[in-house]
Image (cartoon, rainbow, N blue to C red):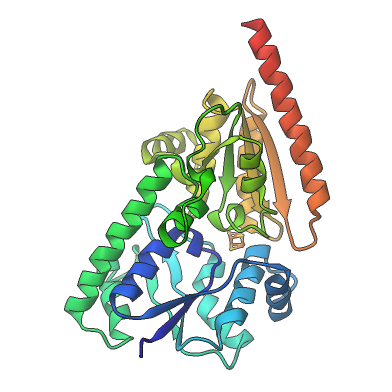
Length: 331
Ligand code: SF4
């Protein structure tokens, strides 16, 4: 019988699922993915963590709770750095340990460390070691790793073409959706920026991407912005941004604040998040420098009300519409 490996539908699932899913499936394992976040999952996550934790971490613990009795292993990578310039938020370093404390009856945890700055840093060897922990040999693991890298690259190119990650996942793992290729007749373009686990989790983000796409708004998200643009924007900053994803978020925000590529920018952050406070301050400071693209900053925790978010969103969209009409009249 195939080994069951549990992957929580939270945090960097939203960015790396094709890589992880392909690797384990190629090695003959069955990947068990937790369900879409709902209030019950959040409640269990909040009960298992401290109040001070950010919403995405609480959601993650809720997902662990839903799958821990159904799998042989939990997959919880220790993400430290996956690119030379940045580090992940420290919450990611200790996730496997925190889960063991919160759930003493958890199954064994597969916890590879991804740290391209450390010793023995090659990601390839990390995957070979990961394969070993489920009794797979080097050749098998290497072959699975190569297929996993191809799958991840395929995911990135679909996102780069303008499909948001949840719709790419639906195309890859479920049924195609109508919203994935809505290109014609779009009136407004918005850059929706923030950590992937804030933007794409329907409960954390209160489904903001769907709300916007239902209004026929075209979305550009952080992952769709090219590395050349991010690198150029980083060179303009007095100090580099060291947080993984933070670099991309600030780079994308600064680019869109100055360009006419989008009509507005929405930044989504989490309360109790040190890195997000810094990113928000950097983006808002830049937004105040002269004639910039309009910006809406939203921060969520488990007590945030949907009605308040919708009111702010509607007001922002109305303001963009007025600006657009004025612009059309003036030209
Ligand atoms: S970056 Fe912020 S939101 Fe993300 S895990 Fe760390 S504290 Fe939580």
